[in-house]
Image (tube, rainbow, N blue to C red):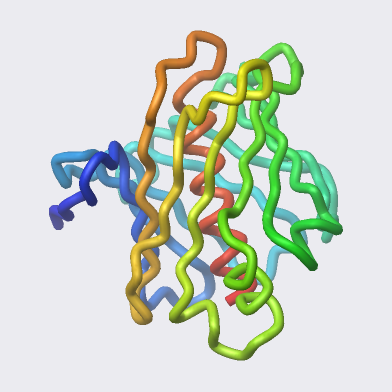
Length: 197
């Protein structure tokens, strides 16, 4: 199934509408071609996400996992199937729970490289504390490089109360951060939003 990306978006994540005993999502490129698929098992106490090349789940391309159980500020390693760490993502737990989502992005050498920050003032608050507000107030995230403040990417949830879609725009080349880490970050946010929703 092809899917048209939003203007300037390099990838689109689309969560499966109905998925019994777990959550699945597909990733499409800017031309609407499927490039990755993930299925999470239901009732897991820790996130363990694998992105596969397709729905057959034969060829893993990326893993996102944490050793923490129910830790709202845990660190998630992004690795190749062979175990090479491409980077890590750490959620700012207290701030993300009560103000707006924020994540610290580390490169493969574990250097703090970027910050992912949810955009807005009232909308993030409303999504957390007003019933069903998240259906009508989609999230947008800016990915800011720490060294110079340049916006290197943006994640935008499309307005659609029935089907969760998130577009990923890559705004600046970054020689240090693997683009797969950006894809992993957006996938993790989509998965966590799915659990919270």
